[in-house]
Length: 328
Ligand code: PBG
Image (cartoon, rainbow, N blue to C red):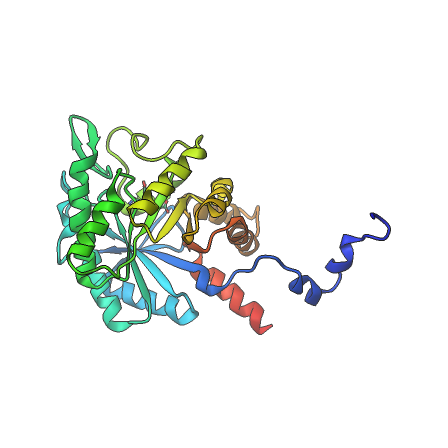
């Protein structure tokens, strides 16, 4: 039975009915807001390639997180920009490091805000790579020791969840062992499992001053051409103890989100990365697209593909749109 009995436009006529047949919806509880934390006091440094995003010193970060939390954002994820970088990224596991201080301050003031941390040494190394460098190569197993120390220092500061983004083999198992040995068996791991060697991270590297000083990240991050390999990554991470797995970037990788959603039963996160954010911002600044509509469409698409939660720099703006709609 087709046309004229079937008319799909019938259900599109009334806005209330359109709402009732909507298959996917966004809610404030879907969002995780990434924040950059740096040293010093009273600092709010704009990031040129990410309009509306800043590097915050701890005191102002607390204010920004409180603002986001008041809007209804349930979680933040922290990235640190330390005062000193070295070959081994030692400030990544400094007890008095920027992230560790930020975790303590946020948890003290907002116990109900879920505080997550990115675990990766690239923002802390002088060469900008996500691992220890020997003879121009990024060495895997030695890097695991740094990641263990880093995750441990975050847990000791009171973090609610750690998220390793380095893409070394075996990092999830190493971190799980370390946390369990210390009694942090209830701190979950969200693994950046299918993390692609994407060109969309450029604005982030600008923000975190972490562009690699030589070479690129293709010896550890995934080839954008590969889909099946993401299943191997995810299955290994789950076996090693990942509680949540992630696809990154999001919009160019909706097929991966869909495929993984159908493959594993653990919750799935997707990261709408800096380049995705900045392209929408730039298009809107030029007057070529409508920022609010494209933002909401991009987030809806990520959810529709199968993501249970979305890391996005648009978190505050998206929540504002969602709450305005509810009131109108
Ligand atoms: C590594 C890390 C990166 C991002 C998140 N964690 C940078 C990279 O892999 O080069 C990128 C996030 C973004 O682009 O928004 N610590």
